[in-house]
Amino acid sequence: MTRRPRDGHTEWCGKDHRCGLGEHRSDEILVDVAGRSRAVLVRVRTAAGREHAEVRIRVALAPSESAARRQLVGLLGDLRETVTRAAVAGRPRPRRAA
View 1 (cartoon, one colour):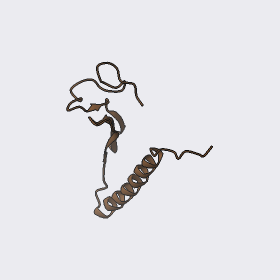
View 2 (view 1 turned 90 degrees about the vertical axis):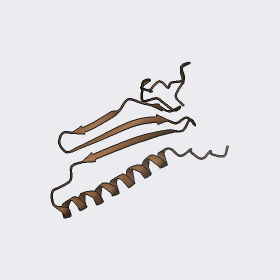
View 3 (view 1 turned 30 degrees about the vertical axis):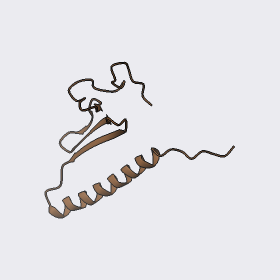
View 4 (view 1 turned 60 degrees about the vertical axis):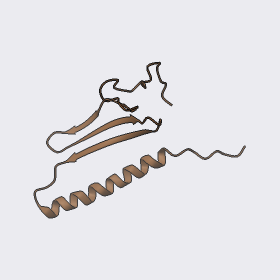
């Protein structure tokens, strides 16, 4: 768990206007492929103490409708895999019997 300084912010918190309503938000982490795509990741801790990764993705679509649909199908499949992999990695490991 991330240590909380006395001011209540986490070490990774942006400590500015992004924090509000009991929530803490990191600076944005950008992955930018000029003219093609962009992803923005923000780490969030809710007022209840639960942490999340918030991800926004923007991808340029092909001008052809059929090609754009193929891109979207591929993107959704990749997102499903990514979200599943992250969820599985975050599960508590079962304890082994001694």
